[in-house]
Image (cartoon, rainbow, N blue to C red; front, side):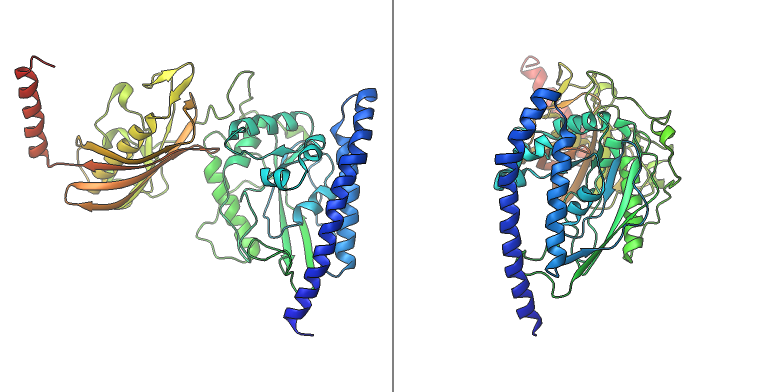
Length: 459
């Protein structure tokens, strides 16, 4: 039988199975939820009841997938960590998370808002103790992080995909640092697991009505639990773990991460080096950073080095702490919001400060370009072409990452694109216009301004 025809026939099976899945949703909404509501009233709330029911229904649906020659699973290798932990995994196909829900008890999952909106699954997710992803309208990333930490402290394992979506077909997406910060803030180990799916069943690029012609086989391997990263090392930890997954998938990678993959015993769930989340403390706070005493001309791409020798700002106006990965066209800068910053009010700094952060990063890049021994110059921010702010304020103690990239330049005039984000949110995207006159020309400009001020009475 031609492959295209076979795949089309299997697509018809998928259509029927999705119809059954929708009927299962209505069964849960109209029958299971009312029964559980009564039990909660009598015996007290217990999300594990809905999880137990959901696991039974998921098992039935996966049995139908196998019976229709679509997707089957081999026996898992290893066992998940017994206590509360953050579970991370690659995400090669649409339904691999269902196998995890079926096989891992007492697990909460970060689920997409779109599933709760397009399908009437919101009440089911809430009853099962799942956490909806941020929509940046009614729910921000910090609220989601608070909910995830609460679930972990209630005894759940918490499942989250570091790629934030399905893996590209035959590949692996970039790992975000959010899951690893969650593990650190919750004082629990990380449980990495590896999903191998051959051929990938409904990866991101494939349509649901055109599944592979062969029966797709899925295998889950639980790796040894790992102690979470220390403060400020979440991004490096994410890059190293991503490299380990790439190696397992047979993909080329430039990094060979030095992760400590030692086994974590149950009594080690709260390593002494971790910081507890205190009441009233914002989950984005307290992210420390590393620094180095190297001079600007000795920068290495992945080292975070002090920004002070590269920018003219001092005292409370020196906002960026360090820079790394400089090129002729851009660099990254990092900093932590403090109470001493300008525009601070009630524990939050106005997001307008992001424009100044971008400007200081551009100044640092200018100094680096001029090589060893260069002194920072005062430049001019002559215009803001675009600025998009996701939030009105940034909480004090939030760790920020500033990325700048030069779009083009004409002589001393240049246009840069800048982004300011944390591990959990994008705060600002902007395009700014800057000028860096030669030192002699700038001195003449400053002198001219002082003359004008004297002639106008200092106004």
